[in-house]
Image (cartoon, rainbow, N blue to C red; front, side, top):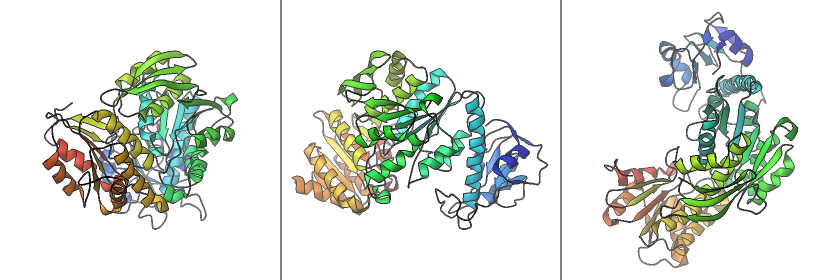
Length: 489
């Protein structure tokens, strides 16, 4: 973060000083985990479902924090923030925030982030926002990789994409930062708009509109309304705003009418400004394609696995070209790209030749279909195993979507389908109704049962995909299969 005095911070967030005279200066990072506080930092006391950050104020100061950003007085120097007014904006609700103190602290954190981003943007910081139903984290990681050679770049670790992770990431930027890449999530209408107010983007990329969170939004059209808030927040074309839109997704392409920014389209459609031609997958499921851009053509061998990564890469390329990269530069970086966030298409080959694809961070119908296509492409005559768990937040479409995935596994001729958990039973039933027989599809109750089955029946050379929504914890299946094989490639 840029260096600020406590008096300046109090003024920015509308708070008051407690146990400090205001001359103290924050020279380190802003943290909400007291274990990560460094000398000169600012500790943000966030109340949670199990612990309250206010209880760790003293620990944070002892670790070197200059002060605490808090909703009530603590036994440490602090900036005490005012409560959120009745009817005030609370785009997310923290679990355990019974008295509204969490909302107050998050509002103050957002105000502080906005202040810092505004100052840095005036000095040339380029803020890039990424949203969509799936692929946000992978695309954010690719954008950060492509921009890093052009100047210091800040991006969130993993999926820090909500009302806490978003401003926390923005506050990692300082006077040296040239690019701030942010991932924006939404659980309802207005969430993306609120995040954009915290850190106004100049470039915004919308990847796709799928079924993720369908149960909360009710329809894909409602999801599109929420995700499109990103392009509505962009500056006009005259002021440098750029909307990067997926030409292959009609709901995303239609967002061009919702923005005054200049529109750049990506995809495999003929009218895409940045597009991929002649896409094919190698023996490890890595895409090869001809990259076509207004600045020229080049061949790309993407270092990531899965055809679905082509769209993510094209979005990243479109952003990087806008910020000064060349086609040859991005092709070189894409070839060297590897998963930067855990449990997203992590491919590991054991010494016995078994290949484990750990894509267990999250799942929705679109991402599972893409992962199954990658599994089949990688197997190429070898036995393929799809270990799949429930897909969450699909509302009334849940049974039908699970059923369709089971049927798709049969159509793709996946050798063995292992369905984990009672919630995913319709997937197993769909496979049988589509024509699966015997033990091609099996329903197991939990992770332990899945691991036992795989350990008993895997053969050298088999390819295993592991995927489910985050709550299912199926990464433990992949970890069990890889235990003791740390030296594998």
